[in-house]
Length: 279
Ligand code: GUN
Image (cartoon, rainbow, N blue to C red; front, top):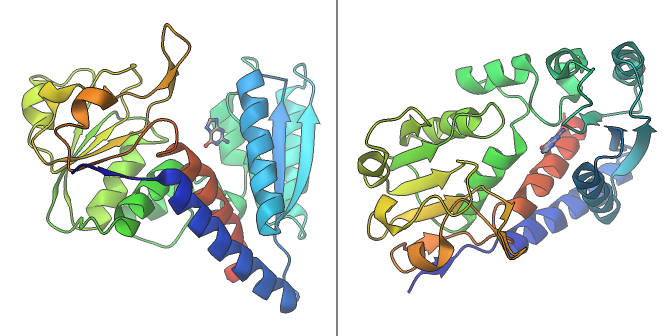
């Protein structure tokens, strides 16, 4: 029987654990506060931002909302980040991406203090991850590690293949798997003989960005398949990077879309916020 890895359930467990921890921190006089910054009104960003604020409310984390006009200049945004960096009552800063085209995202990411970088996107956080120092972890890959661990899937010595090399998912995913003593391959759009490589995987992470791209021909019998994709197909149905119906017959465990990796990203963002108060 293929095991369905239930991200909704696991993320709920994590949020409930965090809720208890926040209440304990409050009893010690420690508050947790996340500043959420959105520039413009990209509808998808508004949904994500609202979900993040709802998760904060559920756990007992305060959230301060900054909804800025699409026309906000880079200078104004950098000034706000500066103010939030030096505001001691703000523990974490989240600037929702993508930003309008006239704003340099890299500059904005670098402006956030690494000590408040709950997204784990700052080069200091990325460097800490690769050298094994404590720091904020990119939320989606950290969530995938939790999904695997909490499903009793061992990583030590396993052959893991990550398809995708983005800064937000593919690269930090590889670093985290390596930290768990897995053998890691990163494949991408220039990889030759992709199917041969993905078929070696005990654990296959699909972060390709193409709807239902990974079918059964890419998957070894009994592999664990994690689907990072989120797309709407021609019928308006949500789907991932994996052809779920076909691959689930071959995999020993698989994440669904929706309800797999997605909910874990927010749970790990909340974990990073709480981390700021743990120290
Ligand atoms: N846009 C899409 N995903 C994310 C995320 O994880 N963090 C931020 N800041 N923006 C995003």
